[in-house]
Image (cartoon, rainbow, N blue to C red):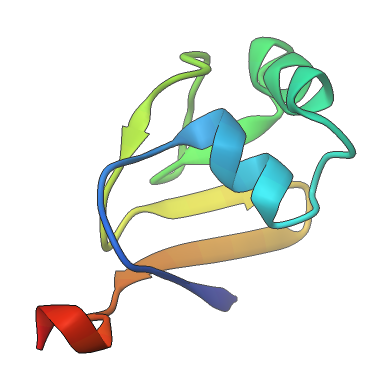
Length: 76
């Protein structure tokens, strides 16, 4: 399982998939979600713009990600 550090929340599901390189494009990320290939907290998620927050777990095939909110220097 990989921790993904985010500096603000929420983040949209399709954007996270694209930014983490699990899809080549936003369209591909949306297709993965629409096809039911993405699990959010162990449940199939079909909302492309689902808002994710720290602690959420995403699974696509064998890849598992957990979101973790981190403070940026200006937030400290």
